[in-house]
Image (cartoon, rainbow, N blue to C red; front, side):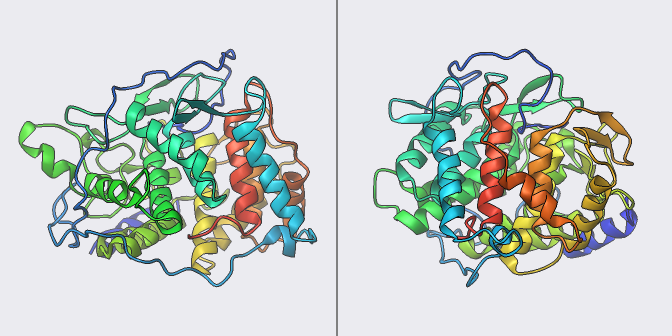
Length: 445
């Protein structure tokens, strides 16, 4: 990794296991589209509406106090967003892009439930299903909420959030308030229940956008629920300190990086795929909490230093200093999300923070036509099978790249059919996400 020791020093000054809650990719036999697996109880969002402290955190896993916000504050939005599908691929008129996005959304949310859809309604609730594993992962639930609010589909959004609260959110014990999901092993051949932060990050940001778009005076008080989640991620350790629990806040208070999982067992560890500086910058505006501004800055520094110097590949898990955690020095489908996170941050901020990292990554894949699924970060191939979701993730990276061959990556995405069959979950959500980002329609609302 590039200058890992220097990276840690910068993070400290600035703070001034793979959870493939992702893919549904492995060699498991396919299963049907059943109900929730491992659902936990019922009940509302843990915590109260008065939330995130405004002060900078102090102490490992802690958070200093401050005046808790009672409302979400307005967001500053870019005047426009990059649109590589229009400007690089020359897709015209722009309505073709909008129509394609809508068609993918409609198929994944409302297509044939046996072969096309990943969205399933149950009464006034709905879940996103990892069809291959018959699992309900917070990654899919959170991204489903994000896609619905971006498409202004309140009728799809509200049932997803109701299900997340009633079926996925832990309602008792030290971890109450966090959401149950599944984490995959480094080789992706097994999974266990876990409290993966990535889906929570999506849900929280989607709730902010829902409040801004639809208001909070209707059937669901999006603002109250978002503020409760802010309270959770900033003050959870304070609530459980006397109980001897190992649960932590979402962020380490020294480096302002998110823990791999919110448990002290993972002290000093994060996952590049859950580091989302674009979201943290939105949170800072919404709460006026400077801690999230620090998290955005730390996240950018971390992501700029975690990739391999030669290949541009990032590990599934890394220390806060940017070095791979033992056994996790693999670029696997979970790690693909990292390049998506980079592009979102550049597109929302108007910057080029990650362009050189993405150039290096795409240069590696261009040198390997027919590239496979997973690699050691040094470039050693671990699985030679072609993986649709990596083709999609590389197209997103190409949207923020200045390499001379970006068109081939973007064209591969544009010509791709909407995934069907048992493995449609991860490749489907990645495809919809990529089209929104590259078509200028994944926006701050």
